[in-house]
Amino acid sequence: MKKNNSIALVIIGLITLSYNSYAFDYSFKGFGTLQAAINSDESAFTGIDDDVTFKEGTKLAGQLNISITDDLSITYQGAIKYDYLNNYDLKYYTDLAFISYQSTDFLQTRIGRLRTPFFLNSEFLDANYLLPWARNPITVYGQVPILEYEGIDFIFSSSINDDFDYEIQIAYGDGEESFLYSNTVTGNKDKIKMKGNGILFLTASLFWGDYTLRINHSEAEADIDTELPFYIPSNAFPDKDTMTFNSIGFKFEDEKYLLMAEYATRRTDNSFFVEPIDGYYITAGYKYRNFMPTLTYGHSNTPSSLSKDYNITNNLSFITASLKWDFAPTADVKLEYSHYKNDGLGENNYQINLAPDESGNRPEEFGIFSISVNFIF
Amino acid sequence: MKIISILLFNYTSSIICTLLLSTQILYAEQIAITNIAFDLDNKSIKKILLAKSSNSRLYFLKDSNKSNQFTRNYTGKSARSINRKWQRLVFSGRAKPPVIVEDMEEMIDKVSSDSKAVGHIDANTYIENPKVRIVK
Image (cartoon, rainbow over all chains, first blue to last red; front, side):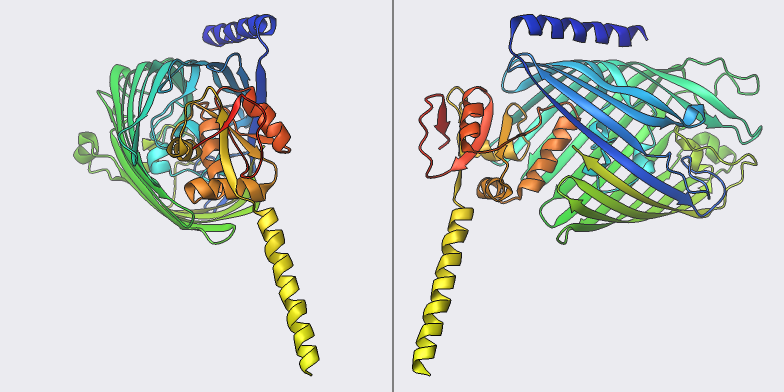
C-alpha cells in the first residue's frame, strides 16, 4: 500500500511539474474482454464449472501515457476485473504505474509498478485481443502467481547486423500475489499471499525477420505473508527460500502463419506444496482473411522426489482448438474449446485459481468451452 | 456489327483506363518522413515499423489504403499487422501508441513538432516545412 502511495505521489508530482514547465502530450488507450465460459464437469477448474460464467477473464482496462519530454514519460494502466478471491466482486487494479526514461536510442529505463516479464507474452497478457487464445496456456502461464512487481528495469535494444536485432532486459524488484490453495484433505480453500522479494529477471531476445527467440532466467526469495492454518505444515510453502524460473520461447508470425512455443521450469527449495514443475505448449495457426484457427497442445509434470516417493502422478495436458475472427479493425471474437487430461494432482502445481469442488473430486478428463469478445481502443 | 464491336471496345478500354487511373490515385506511393532531428534511413524505418525499435513514434494517415501502402512498401506487411505489433509494445508500457492523423497537412505538422516522429506522405507531396524531411 505504501508503495502504491509513493507511485501515486511521484506521478502527481511529475504531472504538476510538467504542467507548469512544459507542454506535454498525452494519449489514452484501453482494452477489454467479455468472456463466457463453461466446464463439461461440475468441479471448477480455473474458476469455471458447469454453469456459464462471465466472470473469468472479463475485464476493462485503460492506459494513460503522458509524455513530459521526448524522452521522459509516465504510464498508468488500471483495470476492472472480477476478484475471484472475494466472491467475484468487481475490483479495480493498478497493473502499471511507472516513469520511463529513454536515455539513449538504445536504453530505456522504467521505474515503478511493472508487469513481470517471465514469459514471451507476460507483459501484455491481459490484452487478450493481442493473443491467439481466449485463455492462456496454463502449463506455462500458470506457473507464476506474481504478475506485477515494484521495481526498475533496463531495456537495452540494438542490432547485430542488418538482419538480426536483439534486446536485453534486466529487471529487479518486489512482487506479491494472493491465491486460493485448495486443500484436498479438508476441502478448504485457503487464501495465501505469496511474496517474491528481490526478484531478478534476466531476459535476452533475438529477432530475425518474423522470428523471435527469447530466453529468461528469474529468481527470487519466495516467502508467504499469511498465517497458515494449523493443518498446513510450516514447510508447505516457501519460507524465504529461493525460487527460480527458466524459460525459452520461440515465435514465428507472418501474414499467414503463426507458430509459437514456450518451455518453462519452476524450482523451489524446501517447499512441497509449491513443487518443481516443467511445462510447455506449442501453438500453430493459419490466417485466412479475417479468420485464424489455431491448435495448441500443452503439457506439464512435476519431477519432484516427493511425488516419486508416494507414487503420485502430477501430469496435466491439454489440447485447445481456437478460432479467432477479426470482425472489426481492432476487435475480435474467439471461440475456443480445451480438452484437459488431469492425471493425479497436476492442477495443484499452479498457484492460481484452481479450486476443485468441495469434495475434491475431479474427473481425469474434462473440457472447457469459451467464447470471448476482445477489443482495444 | 463492326461498329458495335469498336464502340464496345472503346467503352471497355475507357472503363479500364479510368479504373487504373483511380487505382493509381487511391494507392499513390507512400514514402516515409521524419523530423529533421531524427537520424534515420530506410532500414531503420523497417525496424521501427516491425516494432524492433520502440524509441520513436509512428504517425499513420487515417486513410487505411495509404497506411497499408506505407507499411507494405517498407515491410511487406499490412498496417493491421504492424499495428498489432505496436499495440503489444504499447500495452507492455514500452512505447507510445501510434497516432492517426486526418490528412497530410496534419501529418507534416505533427512530424515537425515531434523529434522522434516517423510518418508517411504521398510521394509527390512538396514539403515546405524545414523541420520535416523525406527518409532515404
